[in-house]
Amino acid sequence: MTSVAREPATLTDIARAAGVSAPTVSKVLNGRADVAAATRERVEALLLEYGYRRRGLHAAPLLDLVFHELESAWAMEVIRGAEQVAHAEGLSLVLSQSAGRITPGQSWLDGVLARRSAGVLLVLSKLGPAQRAQLAARDIPFAVIDPVGDLDPDVPAVGATNWQGGLAATRHLIELGHRRIGVIAGPEHMLCSRARVDGYRAALETAGLRFDPALVRSGPFHDEAGSECGRQLLRLADRPTAVFAGNDLQALGVYRAARELGLRIPEDLSVVGFDDLPAARWVGPALTTVRQPLTEMAATAARIVLGLAAGRDRVSAATRVELATELIVRSSTAAPCRPGD
Image 1 (spheres, rainbow, N blue to C red):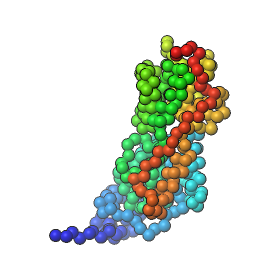
Image 2 (image 1 turned 135 degrees about the vertical axis):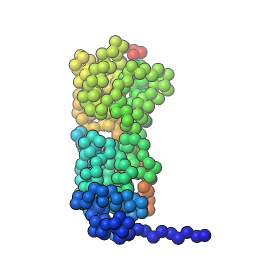
Image 3 (image 1 turned 30 degrees about the vertical axis):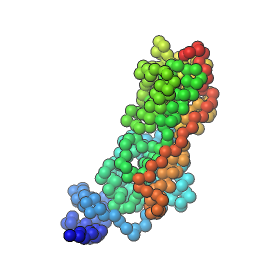
Image 4 (image 1 turned 135 degrees about the horizontal axis):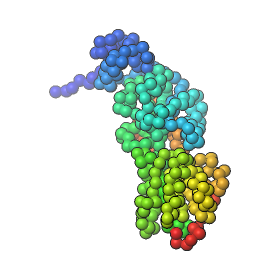
């Protein structure tokens, strides 16, 4: 017995199954607010069940870029990369943030649907299954920049070699002669943070050094967390002679803690950051850091999304890209004053 392939669902099919008019289904598809919540939920469920995908409607010349936080120079580097590609493609960039939430709220998604954006870039964020289905029904592709957690195999993403960066930063300090090396991690739920600490541990182990949990602190990727964690580490009876911070902002916080405690960088304390933000070059002393190619990461993700929107054969929804990190040695690292420390 041969099965008959199911014809693609039409807007009329969805309307009939939902018991509403075709214009109502159209309103849901377009993210209009003047639809009852129960009706919207019923229509969205049917769109997912039928695998409905909208065809033949031109997207608006917009590219959406959403952050879970939008308040640092880190975000500006990402914006620069996305803007470069958007400008080259004749698109405008729409910026938004999800108020610290990893998953953006429905009001944000309704705005994307109403705008009929060409694509969506999510930074340190992710979508729920229902939100993904809503974008798929409108043929709006998306990609994740710097994934915060595990992603489904069919979600395109662009990240960096965080483990290798943590390894290179710690190995640099070991080669200078440091043996007590503190580390300040970012939030524990973030993959990039865990990978950097794993690289730190690997560098210690391959050098025959014991991992000491007393030299580990963690906090948000902000300078305040770097200051607080730095004070804790530097007030230890047997303090570290070097600190690897999870990002440049945390490293600048360690600078502040060192000044407060009368320690000189790099004479008394070596510091390494991660990201290579512009501030790393002009702070005194200039910060040794691991360059994360943020601008290139955003540009790569934007090209993937626009390639999916255009249906280019070489672009797959399962595309995963990791761009290389690079250790940038400046003036904040030196051999320890006490040999063997």
